[in-house]
Length: 234
Image (cartoon, rainbow, N blue to C red):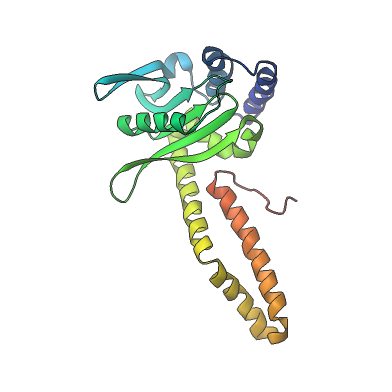
């Protein structure tokens, strides 16, 4: 994925969406999503099956784009019109498609909002789909690492799996930290009190609490697919 191409697409798309916020699904696909996928290295003529059909029970369903490698679907993209706000029902639709067809990567978008989805197998051997990151068009560059996971090159070379694994590791770290926050604060403050005396206990605890909060914010950002975020905003 060429970042200059992504930035160019973003600039053009911002103007397009601002000028035509009521775009229907067909125009959103043609003017926003197809150029986006091409920016990520997908050749729509060669790599995509449009309105990809498959059976779920007795019903035939269709996903807007099935991006393939060696004719095997790797990424499902479901598109709604720019005028249409995305909701939980749209996500559940994509989840069901990914789970039944064993597709590891998914994208739901209306051109304004983007949900990057990942299928995994949990401890009970059940297929689960998670949102690795959700962001608006304006926030897209902050999520460039996660966006790159959808690129043809990243999926083909396995880098997408590494990105997903990294996000999951940070989520586990963040969850553990929330459960052990007070003990972590105490463990950081204790050496200072031991070294300098009980009279600095309040200062040591305050400093430790600030450090843990900044650390927590940084880990949370990585857990949501936004690496290298400065929690202090500097």
